[in-house]
Length: 489
Image 1 (cartoon, rainbow, N blue to C red):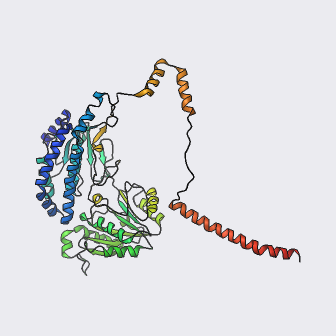
Image 2 (image 1 turned 120 degrees about the vertical axis):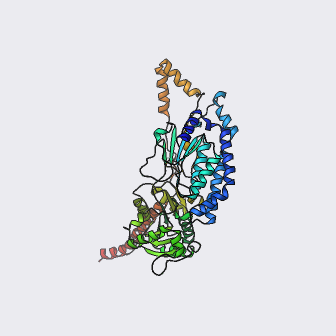
Image 3 (image 1 turned 45 degrees about the vertical axis):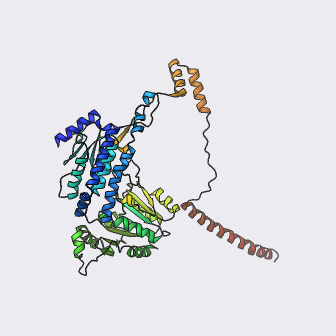
């Protein structure tokens, strides 16, 4: 490990990985090797997991596309023009430079896609890469190790088996910890991902069929391990039976065998997933109601608000459903069960107005409405501080630093410079008065847009007003004749 790491450190000092031609050659070679090794990679993935052939093909395809996309972003002519802007007396406010070294500890979830997309993005940003990939019994890990080593330059890319301390890396290195770890805090030199759960909220006016299909697809594909699939589904109590029926109706493609009469899983499930069997014990203790069960997952309903299952980090094909009385109840519970930390993802099923209202008051890193995209479910988490993009969990901006360049500064700077150098108090005072004379006015038209919350207030106020007016009218109509009769008695 020491020799390969030393070579990478030396290459980083020389800036060997920053050349656009070098980047393109690296990505081109990796693409060729990845295609050639494709059958071995997919076979290894099938050996190590219980993913379907379609899921394996999708993961491999997205990994391959990440190489292509990184190559497409490495435009030689554009990079050359940007490099010489300063020499041509042009400002470059958007200029960026590579850190030098990117140390990557990839997510174990969908290892092939997680590794490839992180490595290729770091390379495209102009960095040398150190990838932690421990030797294990995993066939996928070994095949991936061989493919990446054969496809990338050994001077700018290294695979290590043990964690590399920051002290051994260059001061210009940045670390990516792609798996959630509460012991690691994000900083300028450390990229971390959210350690919170994902929650789905199904409003009473949502389409139950659409909601159920999206949620079960997210929860039961890719072995149920996606951190962005709903760990908890909150359904309005008036529609929860309909939602559970929709779930039962759409799970045939996932649930191919049942739990036997003695309460144990049948052979196919026991062979594929010990996690489900372990969860079954936990579910019994929690008093959860099992709605459906099969070889690829379990669906339960939890009515007890104090159940530990409502705060469970789900890393298996387990769908937990809980009834709520209202949107506000769902929002409060979503925030409460995450200890007021932003959720990794919030999935809302309902009208756009409902989605706006809910997403405004539930803390989360990402909101999806009426759909949970496959590109989101297959991908690793995006580091904290960066917006999640479909198909691009990592971007070059994560592995580079802003380095703006200015050579022209405009008339405003000339004016300020003259005042400072001449100590001209008159001109400085004149400048201040000009700033004070500027009127700051809010150009706010009368509020015509009525939100979800405002509608409730207006409806309540309208009912109260109608009641008051009706009461006054009745009193006037009946009270005046009575008063006249009383007066002339």
